[in-house]
Image (cartoon, rainbow, N blue to C red; front, side, top):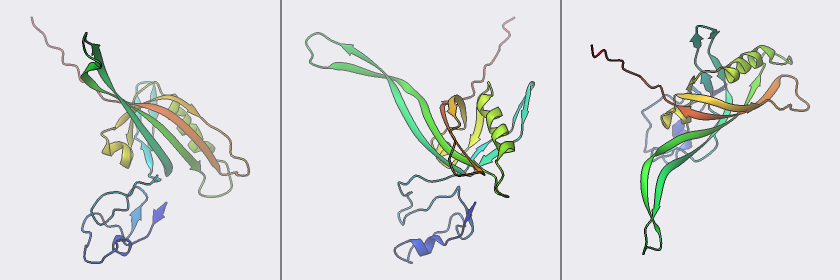
Length: 185
């Protein structure tokens, strides 16, 4: 999926020339920026890439899904203590919680009217994998999310289409924890 546009044609004035990423021939993972350098607050279809998963019992190649939207939610862990004589509680920020991630996407067979069974089979293997999955996605990576664990997923049907399959998934952000084993002998 490619978009061809010149970011300077989108900006209100020509006096601000954008010198960053070449947007003249941009993939959909790039964002349209406004003249102050911030992103527009729109749902953006950005590709989601499941990076190759190589384990002793599972070997999956990467899977790129072009039509994906994500929604992020995060709650904080805050300890609240009531103290006699106060009308409110005292709050102590313990830590930020994990991100809850909702993923909605479409997988398609770009070459014809056939059902995307190979891509769906690979997607199913990723969604069922009992491991943390490494992902590349513009929004997720900007929030520091490079790994996630799939909590649940759904593969609903779309009436009237042959070559497109919708999917939704709920996931939780994950981080690799490195353990250091020290020999105190």
